[in-house]
Image (tube, rainbow, N blue to C red; front, side, top):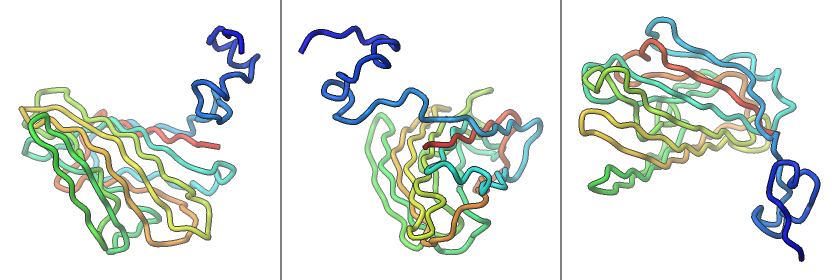
Amino acid sequence: MGVVKLSTAGILDYSKTSNFLSGNAPLSLSAFDLLETTTLSTSASTVTLTGLGAYSDYKHLQIRAVARSTRSDTDSYLYYRLNGDSGASYNSHRLVGTGASVQSSSYATYPNGILDTAGVPAATAPSNTFGASVIDLLDVFNSSKHTTAKILSGHSGSGYARIALGSGLWRNTASVTSITIVDVFGDLAQYSRFSLYGVK
């Protein structure tokens, strides 16, 4: 096999990457479509993304969050509730690194929502410090499966930095029509931003 230039044009023109960097899978350069973005102009207790049935031609949804809490502490946590369900119908798991230690835990029959396990900076963290999260919600419109999630998140503030890899499960086969993001201990701070992407 000859050497192929790995530019965007090269990848589009040649299928040889299927045997090289892309793990024997076709490489898609347009798999993610930005559907909507919410940026808070003032603090809010929750943010709800509604009418998600309009995106049912997508297989998965992804939320990219940049958030901060008003909680009077170093950090807070976020829940992701599906279809407004705040009951004990979620599972969450996490692996967290702080730079000094690694912790793991799991939460069976977890109430309130899928947990963003790295959390977000809060009021006593350095000014203008926000945490970042990428949440993949898989098979959200498949009524034969429970909706599952994977989360990569992290933040740094006041010596309480952490990065986390998490997973979650909503034990319900209903098609997802709304996602509510809840600050567990305070409100979501001004300028917190939540972008929703569709994945084919």
